[in-house]
Length: 243
Image (cartoon, rainbow, N blue to C red; front, side, top):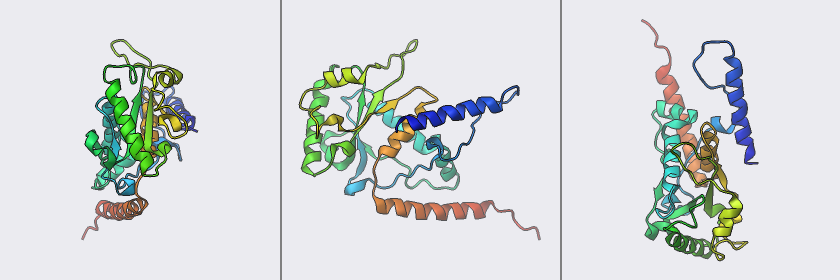
């Protein structure tokens, strides 16, 4: 089911090219209803009464860059986020993250970036200890590791001057300590999301944001406030009567 959004985006790019065929038109976007990249992004409070949506480890090189991409997508990258910003609605579009290991229990989910050095690099032993602490806390709370760990698999091919460390997922699993890759109740109970080159990174970002869980009451509150802001925004843009 993860391939669907990437196929939708490919279709969108094909449509853009087809519509511009033989025309001197700047590159734009084609709107296709019900595709993930045009879906409304709703980010409410972290679920379970937690203070943060995500925890990421500084011992997991690359994880912070993924979080930065998600923050940019929420603030200005998506068409839905832009429409909300134009209406002055910014209250619930901030991803709350922490990288303080003492606060790992305050985060509802743990983001893990996976490439060829995740389990083999110099900081890997420290990352493994953090994962063990987080997994123990997750199971102690009676939570399912499948929804707790958000896995991001590096899928970008190295280019001139850039090395992303793409490798087979089987190689990543093989390099993982045995106690972390046990099934069930291990790190790999959930399906990883591919982290792709642009323009397909847009689908990767949206899939990641969709993987974040949030408080259901917060979502309802968000929708109510959103509709109020849209109404206010529409009223402020309505033509003014000329006396």
